[in-house]
Image (cartoon, rainbow, N blue to C red; front, side, top):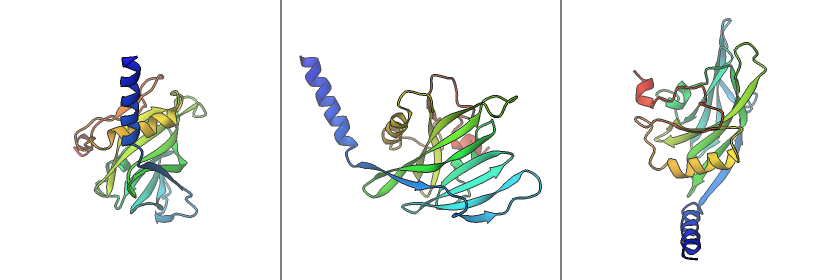
Length: 193
């Protein structure tokens, strides 16, 4: 009985800590976003700025059938925009912003990634949890789309990790039962080298 009471008290405390967090959703529709760079005749597919939440916009870029997404007030030195999956990929069209006291602190975006170099139609999905800080963002956690309750796991990672995660030095973490996500897990300072 003592264990049950202790568990209930712990659950109540954990829930109370996240009670003021809510989700806000925005769409990525490149036809409605502002194109910031046009495609070239080779592999560059273009760049766009899409409306986000709380002063954080979404910057989408496409090159060699791989997309990247940066979240923030600027694109330069924005670590999240420097990362993309190794396999051919594309972004989902919905961003889930985790918001506390009216301020976004994390953004979750689903990606579809080719998992077979011989057959690009074989795909898997990954949820990428981005920490938002100082007008920029970084990847801090990855959840395989096949992971049990993947959306809830991504929300929990956003809520639990964002406060302490340091983009420059911390390595992103992973929830997966199918192996690593096929993307560099380096901290932002390593990407800048």
